[in-house]
Length: 188
Image (cartoon, rainbow, N blue to C red):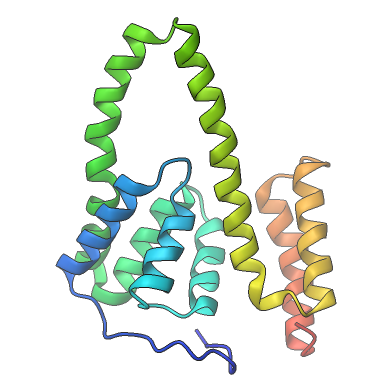
């Protein structure tokens, strides 16, 4: 994976398995409403283990395979730095804390889900979760904002998905092929 020539952020040394576990544990227990913005914040901005472009490329690969994007991303990042053991450490960190919390919350929800205030709270939280996805999209788009063809391709992919209800695999195939062609031609 290549880094953008104008990137000035220095990447820190390769994390060990414990650091991977702890970073993804922090992500797992902090990621209310969506974990990908937290993965970006901790791995790219705080720990500086990856450059922006590397993160975007990893996320692109992880979106192209079945499974939850954040789980795929944690496994990919862990494996990149420490092989299978790193993948397992990142996965365990990401899933461990939230699993315990989810089991407790499930029990509470089963007992209190009929209460109007609980329903209202969940509705309000869904709005905030949507904001996290929008924030992540804006961060990912940063390297491409000055390229009109890249912006057009992003908008086309979003429209195919949101309005025409294309399956993600077909959006990736169609728009991805165009993106590859534009990139090879030096236009992205």
